[in-house]
Image (cartoon, helix red, strand yellow):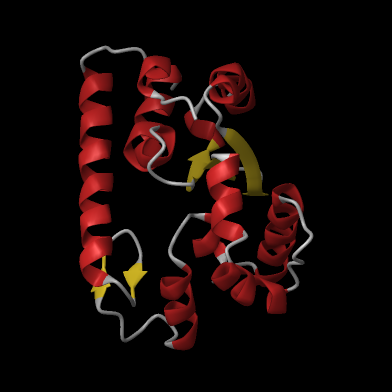
Length: 188
């Protein structure tokens, strides 16, 4: 498969990031589903860079690659909030780290744990209160579940989830109608 399939996956799973509503999205790609995945991804880099989107390989094996698509300023804002730093610093992240340093530390923690460390929610732009609630309650006792498990500000977060859903639907509909993928991505 090629470009159309790649764009569909991005639309379905990263539209809120591609349109600037969300700091980051994490996607898993099966390399064998594409003729040349690395070449395909590389062909999109100029478009992503022009629109303010970066990619980071969080983990990879022979068959799968796990990529974070992110908007640097939004991710910086999410990771360097005082509440996020309260969660991150005891886990080895340092207040003077750059976003790139933090991404490298996340990658190393994933490699050591062989699973998703709970702080990954902060990298995806989840509210620190929800990440903290998830850690404290071990993923239980949440008040709502949607794009993530919600522990605080339920009404506000439900509205945000609705915006993410509407954004994804609109992005995919426009893509199916033949609008160019690059034109659907918002500059940031």
